[in-house]
Length: 323
Image 1 (cartoon, rainbow, N blue to C red):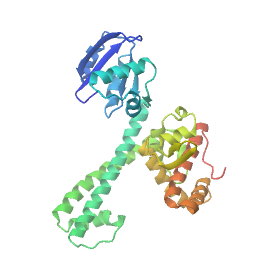
Image 2 (cartoon, one colour):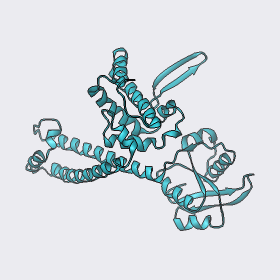
Image 3 (cartoon, rainbow, N blue to C red):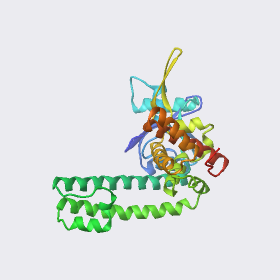
Image 4 (tube, helix red, strand yellow):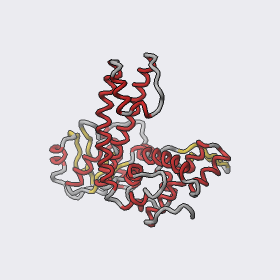
């Protein structure tokens, strides 16, 4: 599937070709292509725009699965690659029940993901604007006290009185981003009230409604992880393993899976170990810190935090500092 077209092949369970073609990624053309076909099992690779086509094909009455791009390539790597061959490969893997698939959350959870990821993007954009304004101040050798105080309403007015074209431009964008951030935060507060899982997670020191919604929306249905190790792997909080013979070497964490979940767990762990000294998470952090330093320890604390979250969501239990 590409931005403007997709290569399609339809075959029987035995592999006999029924229909194939290249069609535009337009609703009308897709509906027309599948109009004389019923109860198909359809596979396509995960991409940025997968949701639209997933919902469209599912709405036509077909079972849709999302192929995991990286794992599919590992199985079906070929020297000659064309759209026709790739489509045929997906069909063959699906037919043989060998297709590695990606999890597709329910539409409601997908909307939550978009909401919190939008808030993340706005926050990071605001951070870049702050950096640009500080750079402009240093370029003009204008002294300022570093920290958040420089961007209070009063200080932004003072920055405006400098009559610096670059700063004025960044400040105008900053004001717009601030308004959008407040709007997103109101929506997040309202969304957080609808889910018991979010209320449970906010019982952990270091996790607010915003953090809890990120965690909940990224994990989704926790029952899809049969063990806590599977969830650790999804968050990219497991070490790389290099094995040769009887020797095994453990490296840095894989950083695969959900980068948003991994990021917010590390941020929440930083706050937790500072303000909840008696918890098992903090004790685990301090133990690792003494041996291997704070950087390794905070990753270990994030993983321990995720372990606690896994069992809280699975058993619907509130956070306990001990035990």
